[in-house]
Image (cartoon, rainbow, N blue to C red):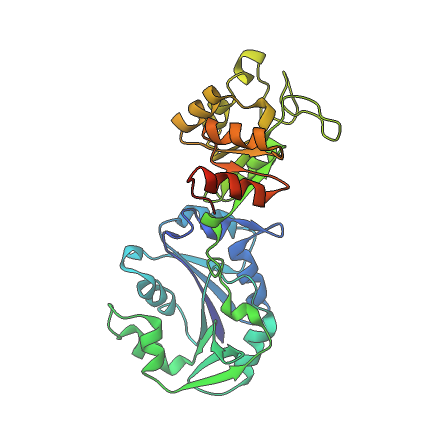
Length: 314
């Protein structure tokens, strides 16, 4: 028999949310990992930890998946590996649950090859999953609890096999861009859903309080663009609403901005970025108001004005 051990016992400290149950292409992230391996292995074992009940709910549609909680998950990934390995009675794969781009053919490739420990590579780089033959089960279980899978792997003879699947290198944290991205929208309902999917991504609330020749306003009483219906009195203080929705940036049409509401936004910890400011006098006025960002068709003009006022820009 061949087993597949899926690791999902951590805190997801980098993502700051339970990334295993984030939706991607309509499916929970961890389920993409299970689906890729389940027709290749005889049994899938999911090892949970901190987010045990969330994972159980996410994988409940699989009748043939075993879920076990690592009660010592705070001791790190190697303790979760040992928790899963104790259940196997044959060869086994080990794969973190946040590698959704690995093809089933990678698992099949490693099964068909030889070697006590088998590791796929892409363009010379080592990736996941790792395949371990059953005779190493007890060796792994007796290995130093304070160690890790990489040290264990490197202490043995490893066979490397090239694959054309780049997904063996890419987990959800590969690019680490969440805290460098701001997603902004006129439709606040999208931002509300985004917060539920990944609260780490910064959200910018675009507002327009007057009709333009090319764009209709989205801020008015009982607007369908906002998360709920707001009165005119509430809409007068937009930073208050955006703060209540846990936004990060107020993307305001520059003609709607005053020095007072920029100050209110800053009081709430909101960055204020105005659009689309092209005239020199308007650029100067926005700078004097203390906005944090200016969207313009003439960035060189903004740059020159900032330099003339000894204001740093980037």
